[in-house]
Length: 173
Image (cartoon, rainbow, N blue to C red; front, side, top):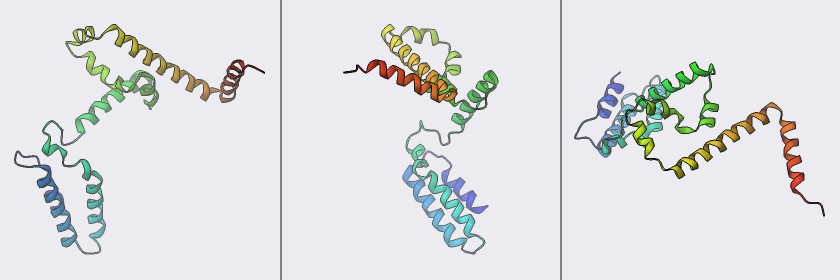
């Protein structure tokens, strides 16, 4: 458990840490791992820790230079899980992919927005033109969803309908 304790200690946030110092500390820990745990029985553990760490390496240190970035995405994951659970309870469906496609990627923020006190005031700041543009995007998204469902239900009939519409557009010579 010593390797894990060292990694936790290195990644623990502190005022005096920067991304470069934490990165160097992590590089030193990974080198230490390879030197210290060199028996055949330890190789899989060292490879696992190294590959797991390298998989997160690119974004692992940003939070030390930017205080507004959270160290983990646990709060985001919890938020999405709650939204997904509510969707499952409402619809009885396990997958919420169609829900996202149909309603847009911002639909997960609706529940949170509805609980905010100043929602009405914020909505009153939206111009009518902007509302019309967003409404048009919404209608297009719904239409795409309808067309996907029609195709899945009966692909041959859907394609035949497309051919019929296309042939009406083509003017014979």
